[in-house]
Length: 329
Image (cartoon, rainbow, N blue to C red; front, side):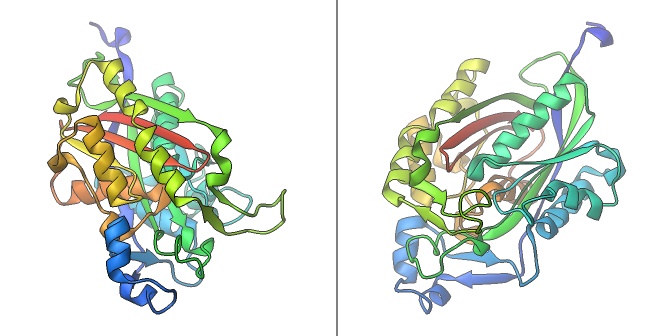
């Protein structure tokens, strides 16, 4: 096969993460609302979460995660020509958080925009960047999931305030020639779904057009749990069907870090061995669009995820939205 006959594949060059310095433990939360460490751990698996400092914005977290990913990839900001930021907690209504990160990195080239799919945002952003890169329109993409959910939490609601935290994760993707083989590095397949009928089960009760306020996160926990475990595994099965691969072929399963019980039950339903599951929810809580890249960066940094490994990303978020991305690392 000659060079001009090769297709393009989006190859991961590096990942990075950033967490605010302040941690909020379950015992500290118990002083704010009627809860306990035992209650939170038993129901969610969460032990602590990070909280952005006063004045520390989503773009600031995203910039630091971006710099870490660029360093891990061994490239400079000037090598990037596309930035996609997945976030539900932007600095401003506009301009986009992506353009703020672009400016902070000293970049003037390329395109930068935000993508909003709540907790599925990073997987949606990876799928979107993959389409840009495989089309040949762009060469290297910086994909970021960044959130300051602490700013939209009702800290008097013990059912939600114990779940969420702040943070950012990033990935650098590069378009490279590919024969299309399953053993070649890069994004093999992505699958995205949405069903807007479920809006009221997980939403924020504010917005510029509806209320002219920021609002607070509201959630019907049992309904979200039921949907997350019962419905969203279809996008993972779709990835297997598209490639002919199976759960046994996976080296690592990196799901959205919302709740340890959801993670474990989803893996069990898919036939994925427990030792292949990357879980960081106990340390980070639910960081929405940042949770998958934070978990990825953790598993790469500690040596679990290595070049050549087959990695499945999966997430579900408000809307509902859900998606998967299967990557040969």
